[in-house]
Image (cartoon, rainbow, N blue to C red; front, top):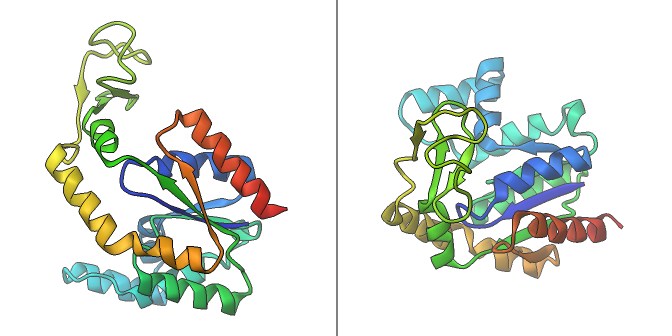
Length: 218
């Protein structure tokens, strides 16, 4: 099964991607991880990407597609894979379609995790983690059982990501709607798009997602 998750930053794509990968026996692919692995392995395309990044440039869509092409030929992708964070633009989507067609690995479904922007900003700006063990918390939805004490390790130190503030989140949302949201129409026209409610509780989002994936696999 080959799956793409779409949704703005903070919609929960990463959380759901990890669950899908475990329960469905498919591989979660991140472009960042694949780039680093290609560079570390010293592949031809990895060397090209490394040279570009060291010079301060942006790795082209063509190189990213080639890295994906290499990665999906590895044995652990035999049962399928899930792309989280790629494609981000229409040219990337077209390039990915071409790759999948050439390799005979058809895309099964694209799942859009729909969210409310205002609620999403509240969700992201309220996040914080235990500085010692990394357990996640939220000002509203998940506070420690004992005030200022981590449930998991008992630490009293917590931290927040510097970019988890309202202005940065709004900027990231604008970038998403400008560059990535057009993919919703693109995949809808191809008959591949399914949408679920990303504002529901995590278990309910997972249930909706599994319903969509079961139907796509049938």
